Picture 1 (cartoon, one colour):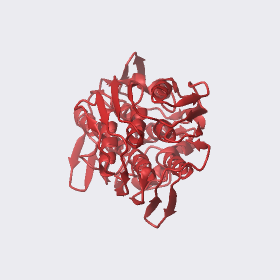
Picture 2 (picture 1 turned 180 degrees about the vertical axis):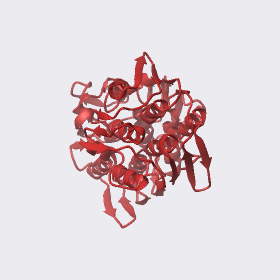
Picture 3 (picture 1 turned 60 degrees about the vertical axis):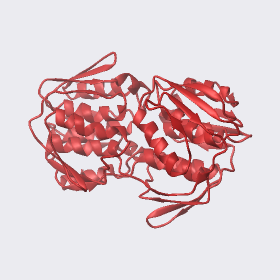
Length: 415
């Protein structure tokens, strides 16, 4: 439990490394024959799960002072892959594990044990993989080998399985064709394709990412991967600057395929002062107005955007919140409850979240053990009438272990 008092935010920090980019680089390094290097790695909870998984699948890892050395080569050494609480690890490494002709069981912890798997099993079965378990909840056992072919993938809940198939199918003995139904979070598929291209893997994709042609028998090339800054984490600081002072964030790539760089669009629509320089982005506090934003492709932005909306005059509307049901918590319902405790009107209407701006009263902020809800509560505390009490501050380790250290730096004191 952590009490965060109202504060003015000021200063500069670098965005932490992107766990999305890190996990994709780990998958590519595993599948490459040879030695890859990863610079600016993250050791958040999800990344640690990814490191455990690639070791279990045959990679050798050396930690240097400022980077990782990965000796690749897919050669499973364990019958169990521990995904921790990482949905991306589960959905991306399940198809990769299925390249093996042996049974491999994927396990997880916390909220991952409750997240649905039913959209995952059928595509793998159609590609030759036997699935054991109830195919609805973990544990899940896959028995390959994945053999390629033609299959349709449901992208309406998550794009992460599609990313896993795009990594695995180039290694198969037969060519593959994928068609995708209702793809969400399309920018993250473009990030996957970018990583694959860097590793020398060729995939033909339709412009709208509705279909993919994947040649078989491809070899991954060992590479030097530089992990870009994480827009998902940086969004909390950019919102903090807009509501409570001024902040400059470094190591953010404006050309990134991370969907959450759209935070800048929302901030500008809300009237925040946004300045983009060559090596940092600065946001300053200003009088904020209600805004609307479609978060269908970037659902992780909803928690920081909800905090922004709570500080705007009038009612703001966030679209695309249905997908939040399948995150570490039912985030839409959780945010509604947390804001209601703070005296902020927040309601969910089908695929919309409507938030009326007001003043946070302070007091309890339940996180539901969700890292992004904990960070949202901490940022909301900056302008509250009294300290906000976060019931589980340690859950931020899943994506951003140094979050509270950086908060202390930006507020000039111990929080």
